[in-house]
Image (cartoon, helix red, strand yellow):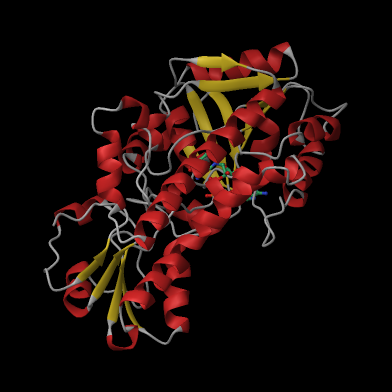
Length: 390
Ligand SMILES: NC(=O)c1ccc[n+]([C@@H]2O[C@H](COP(=O)([O-])OP(=O)(O)OC[C@H]3O[C@@H](n4cnc5c(N)ncnc54)[C@H](O)[C@@H]3O)[C@@H](O)[C@H]2O)c1
């Protein structure tokens, strides 16, 4: 690796750490992706991308001399800046799992020095950065919280365009973080640490609530046999104030629900809007099956699920609602086919085959490639997204 400023990204093989590492390597930095998953490290070091991310292959090819993946602690001690981008999950009861995240800092405390800057990039439970400050007290005070806000799959397109939120506990941490993010983005916004933590969680909760509003409207329409896509398009036609209403559809994945629930726990569950959004969004698969059962004798029907990933045009199935739908259908002992453009399921078939074999086709994920498909008129289509041309 060259003599540029050294950055070490903890969780550097992840969906946030990896693209950020690529963008930083394209600037004046040498990047070490500190990653515990050996398979991911091997892939990256042999020039292969660990998952689908637009443009990542080219970046990796172009900057491979400035980026290295591994799990060697020496890079934690020797880097100028340490960025933390490991996961911050919630448990089965939606309670934030803070233990592992905090343990990392007890470990770091033993090997870092006071000259380094520590930037936390993960989406965190409010107040955690304060806890980290206390853990690292006496060893390192240069702690920043700068949340990631990219859309997975489009990180390399978005990183240079998105304003970067910067917060920190001292002048050095703010200045170092500002300089770092100014090198990849046109705008930085300085906030307090708690403000930055809330900016991130409010952003995801806001999106999750918006999806829930559309999904609730969709369910109302379905109960009255009305097409929500039409109602939505009439609502938006020439009426700017409704322009942000999203399509109805599965709102899933590792971030939106999780961050809404982190916020809910932070305010001791006094967040009815967030809790109801979870019930609505997570309830959509069951609602679809109940409606199908009302309208058809499903015992005689074959059902196809188009799309298994948690959102369009990625290969990530983390917390995907397609699997919840599959589970509900299989519980009824129904014949179900599955297909995805990015994810290889052991029972997966091509979209063409799925359309041919199924009587009812549920478009669970609006992958761009589905825009071009034609579904014969004799098939039933459940397309909350309105992506299939009729
Ligand atoms: N995925 C997104 O689009 C997105 C966007 C914005 C923010 N975030 C937030 O960023 C954080 C990371 O999300 P992600 O999607 O990148 O998760 P991820 O699971 O894809 O990546 C985390 C990586 O960290 C590695 N890891 C975990 N503990 C480690 C340790 N102690 N040492 C070394 N490596 C370790 C894991 O092996 C994994 O590869 C979360 O807080 C998430 O909410 C995610």
